[in-house]
Length: 310
Image (cartoon, rainbow, N blue to C red; front, top):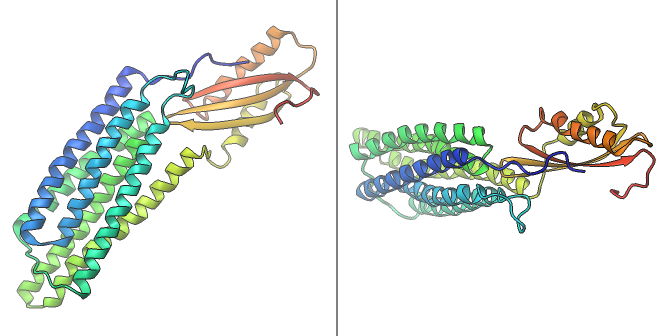
């Protein structure tokens, strides 16, 4: 017996807002990538070039996010009865893999510059300017993305927000590296030039750490992992409904921003179909405080019946 007739479908307004924020992030990534590439080549700074590579992958990831947000907004159909929300998780996983590949290149190039090659880095005003601009843009985009991600429960937008917030920290490290390079010229201390490669290594380490965290959360979504204690809380909420004697099975999964719950309840034998139905219908609002965007399917059985759900 089903307590609600259909899964919650994202409104057109919500889909448009998610798409608008995602497109804005993609445009920001385009501008930052171009600026960092030009300035990085001008100054020979690995720190800036590593940031350019990071922004380029953010651009690819942002494009994937735009497509994922649009695809996830499609309603459920016969081939996708739970909707298309997992497209967002796949997009986030794709972004994670791209970031890890970028880090591998940054680490390789940094090691080459630290131990095997000598590259003259120029700490020009253009370098400081483009990194300062990047920090300002990243802060603005990260806040907008995270606000939309929390509002619409979007894993793809959350991944983008995480990337832009990580860029703030990595750009700050590069800025510090450039400052040390500039100081090396003034103090005639050539060893400080290595700060640029060290800054690039620090960027790679930061991105790897964040990518692993994001990848783990994304894989958990794809594997239908639920937060610890959530099933127990849902069972307790169902048992609190008058007329529910037992709740032997509670299964839950997250698809995009929506949650789906499959609940088996047992009621006193001898109840009429109308009475059992009324109890089942009451289970859904009992779960709403835990998961506002939840679609609940309730199976009702008399107490003591053979358990077909086991």
